[in-house]
Amino acid sequence: MTSVERSWALSACSQLPSAELAYPFGPATAVFKVRGKMFAAISLSDEPGRLTLKCDPDYADFLIQEFDEITPGYHMNKRHWVTITLEPTMPEDLIEELISDSYDLVTAGLPNQVRHSVENR
Image (tube, rainbow, N blue to C red):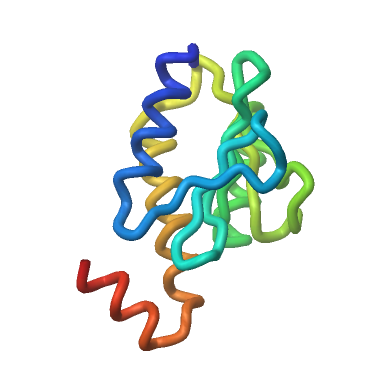
C-alpha cells in the first residue's frame, strides 16, 4: 500500500460511529477510539506504514499464518491485537473487514448504556 491507502485507512476509521482521533503516543501515530477505547492505531511516519487492530484470537492466529504482512500486535496484547504492514499485496476489502471487526469488538466491550448510545448514532 502507498500513502494513498494509508489515507484510505485513516478515512475508514474516522467514518465509524463515534470514532475519535487522538495522538496519545505522539504525532507519529494516529489512534482511533470509540468512547475512550482504542480500536485502531496507524503509524504515520514510516513507509509503507502499519495498522494495528483488535482481533478475535482465533482469527488472528489464522491471519498471521496466512499473511506475511500480518503479525501479532506491535506493543499490544499479542493474543488480541494484530499489526498489518500496509503493503500493496494486502487486499483492501480484508483491511476494511478487519477495521470493522476491531471496532465491533471494542464497542461490544463497552457498558450497555454506552454501547446503545453508540449504536443509536
